[in-house]
Image (tube, rainbow, N blue to C red; front, side, top):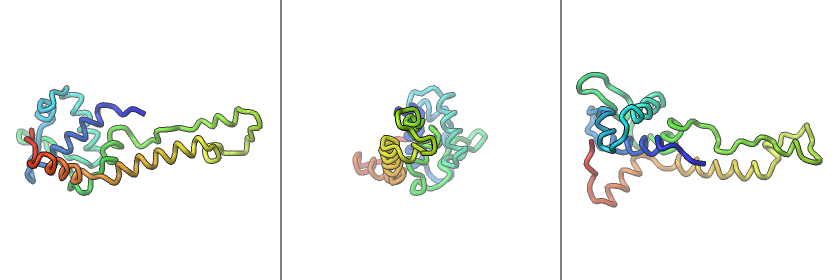
Length: 152
């Protein structure tokens, strides 16, 4: 499975928004310039985050994006799902229904050991991302670098 670069851009943008003072917003163009990214494409990611309730946007000359809820309430999984969607990484097509000894009455998505193993792996991945918040990342950055980074 390969995630789009939009996930990385969204995660870094959200992390940077954790250091903004309350009530302040950052324009998409300024975030894009900070990372030397195409502004139009980053804006699409930010709009997806806004639709998911992760960021909010404020129009006007002092407008831009800010987190819509506290960093403690935004998981990495929230951001990934906002950008990539919530579909499982593996989709069982019930290949065993075409094999020898197949039983048309069996739901091989449930009975297939390959499908079960892939579902367990997907759940473990999702659990790991759901267990980490933006606040956790923010604390790790501050501990590692002993100061908050410069923000856009």
